[in-house]
Image (cartoon, rainbow, N blue to C red):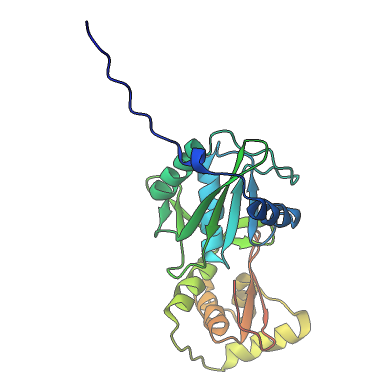
Length: 239
């Protein structure tokens, strides 16, 4: 008589997660804050590339947390199979992000028998971080309020040079004088406006503004429709 060998059972990570009242309390308090500069909700990991984009934006900014299993309206339905959702996201992170994002993962058990996945992205030290869009294209994203927007060439350069933490010097010459007279009157300037104001090339204007930001003379306010620059009132720029 033939005997069948019993199949080896592998316990899912989530099967060992018990309901922790303190963690649940902390989760509800976090969700109650709503989406913002350092918090993003995702109902499911149906589109993992979008989750990676949010994580890259956090890494390029001040860090933040992505909660999978939470709806945009703040309700917490959770996910049924957190291990599968987490696997899909981690595979996408490995495939789509450069350089490696430093993050902490946690599966939180709800009293309903479902789960929330927390992905806490730490402050990035190897900025800028990029998302692979295709074989030949990549995008850099930053977090502004509750949105992740594509970073301009200038923002990418500032992130890179800030991470190097080197001293910056600039010359207060004719172009800078025109720039500050303009800012005294209009408060803000774009690269294109500065280029036209001084009748210099766009690249030259861009380099001057970037150097002034790095020297903490100007601050940059990124926007999807174009960055704006203003006089920095004695505060250190942090994107």
